[in-house]
Image 1 (cartoon, rainbow, N blue to C red):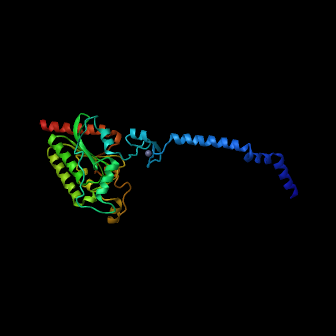
Image 2 (tube, rainbow, N blue to C red):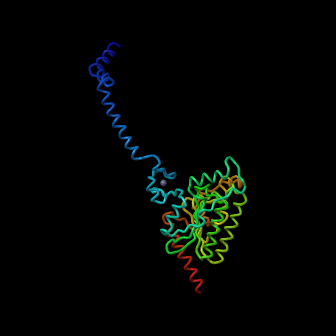
Image 3 (cartoon, helix red, strand yellow):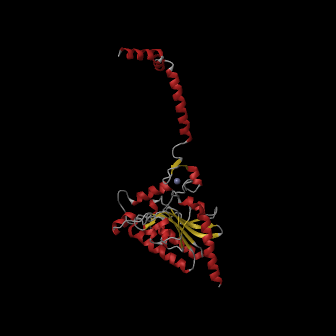
Length: 319
Ligand SMILES: [Zn+2]
């Protein structure tokens, strides 16, 4: 007992553990400790300065941290795994259309609260909030433009405005676009992303399904091409009308496409849903869509398809 306690004491005493331990908090230790922390915090501060918040996005598919600027330059497609992030209508138009050729139609058309809808918040206040936050007037941007050498009538939906829901403005703008395309003998391209009909407009939103479909029927009577491009997600009333009426139906990789949600279908049918149900890849395998095209290849593929479709029509007209 004694010996052990003695040796312990002697070891600590002789081997300068005591003086070494005592000085740090008193004198020598403080500056060295402070220096170390200064270096440490200095480094972390510069790191924080290099990576300010809001400039990086984590890819939900592969967990890679992506630098926002590079992600934007890559058309919001993950540089590592190819995951397609949502993209705004303006950015998408910019990525497809020849510079300065987009002539927007009905840019100021806005929805009216016909039903005086009141819920947790009124439809009017929702519309105002979305207009402010998105700087859009409604969930679709339409216009005539050039893609490659082809003049086309282009409509691009935007999910950020009330979930891309189809109210009377979306229906009316698209119908006018299709009718303009028919008048001018132009192909129509509609890029969809939508949660379906806009419940705040009740039956008025459901009527848009018939209206847009009828306009497309007249367009088809003139033997003009219509390309429907489905992006994540395209569902419900939009899927049940113009989105599935394309001469060619294209989709972006991984897009969720369907009419009712998987849970509703599972509950109704009481059956297990197959893996990958309602994805673009599943629908391609089952013949509902014609091709899956990556966002980066979309423009060149649209040009190729339009050349093919219009060349066929030219030959048909000549013979
Ligand atoms: Zn990724």
